[in-house]
Length: 227
Image 1 (cartoon, rainbow, N blue to C red):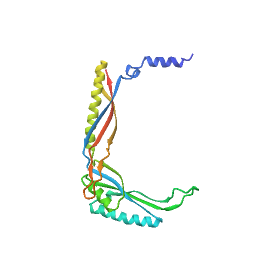
Image 2 (cartoon, rainbow, N blue to C red):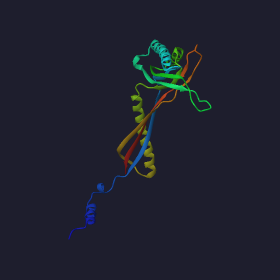
Image 3 (cartoon, rainbow, N blue to C red):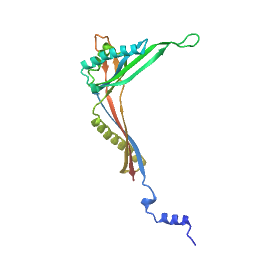
Image 4 (tube, rainbow, N blue to C red):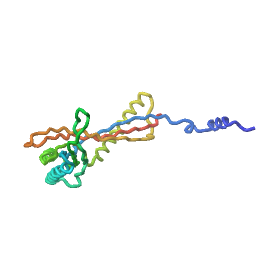
């Protein structure tokens, strides 16, 4: 007579070692670390928008003004590698329509935007003034960053691990257990980039820029064995 399959499983479970029969008790805790520093790079997206009766006229007017913009950037000492076309389009423009609902072509619009990266933040105010004076009629965004954030991220990670351990020790003490070996560590991090605050001053005075600070953060989840 054949031995029933469920009986074989029951006998195998009975002879299994305690480590195989049950998983270790664990506690998982998250930790957060954050360091802050002043940014050392700035980036601005600026460009020229022109309109004319024909696409060729709009493009010619745009190209002429963009040459002046590029000349201003060159005068500021911005390297070619730090200038990149971000947006370019030619689009027809129509009237809102008459009583019959028909729309009439009124001309063409050309938009040409470039993203400019500045080494350092001190020149940003002057760069904005120079761009506007050169004919840029669109300033679409200003952002800041840190060229080398590795040391800041390392500090944030250390703080995150310490934060997770402090939380775990608090819970372990309250539960009447103690922390054992670390079983796993997983990470998820982010770098916050606060919006700059800037005020457009009169052209005779440089635009004031407040770069603030960058926040480099690290978040970890640590799993301990508990006894």
